[in-house]
Image (cartoon, rainbow, N blue to C red; front, top):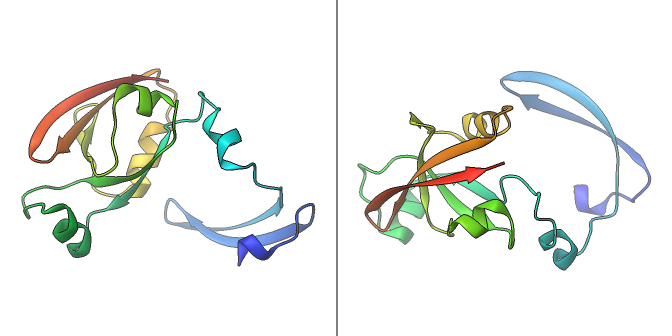
Length: 133
């Protein structure tokens, strides 16, 4: 529905942010093409995540003991892409703290820190990747 809104017009959205309902009025902009987006090396964090569900677990052949968020998209030339984060990686911890939902993930990475350590599970191997903001 959002994609059908005309650029330059204002729209009002009712959202829930951090568990609280809010109403926002935004001006609709024209989306840049993908190649223009990928040139933005400052895009933070440079990847999107989804919570693990049974369909994702089955597709990635993950045991029930693996918890976290799965990386579903990486933007080229961002800090995460350069550091080696890959689609299908499971982010288990940020700076040593377990991460289980997308809201906590985005809240943590948007804090005013300059360095983040992500514990990643990739096909059963667990390791840390550090990324500077």
